[in-house]
Image (cartoon, rainbow, N blue to C red; front, side, top):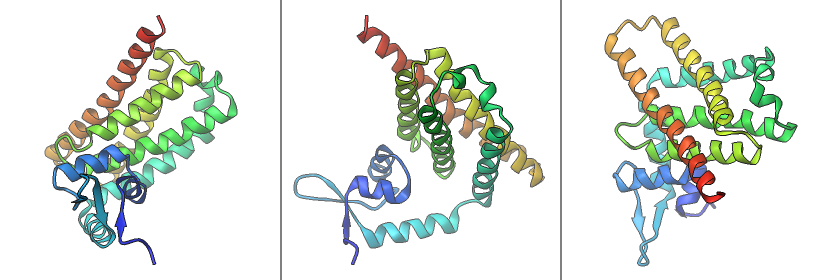
Length: 207
């Protein structure tokens, strides 16, 4: 029998999001949460399961299409050798290359989660992804400029995927296009800002 009560990290793993995202959703009342006498967040498994079902039932079809198309396009980009043409990618060993390809999936999942929310609910996850990109870049010996290029490569893949999905669906509403552009820009800009801020902090510490 699975445990009735889950910790914040267990819920984050179950939902496939960063723990900071679960914390934010809980504080905003988006996700059902309980508090222990010591003030710790605890989640009833049955409530989390129901919440997940409701999210799947109400999620826009476009989100699922974006996910499928983005995954296909990511594989296509790699198979076509576009990654190997990137100067920053040529500096990486095989382990680092695998990590960066996986980070593309993390970016995709974070963006999908953000498209399902409104307001600032996705900001913590965007910051967490930006920090991970910056930390990985530093470990791999990439400069701030090269780490930025790495992120922009994967962002371009996702943007191309999303545009192709919306174009194929013949979405003509200016409001829908504007809303999509606004959300994607807000999420990816926060990641980019966090990458640059993290590099700046590293440089100050190491002076």
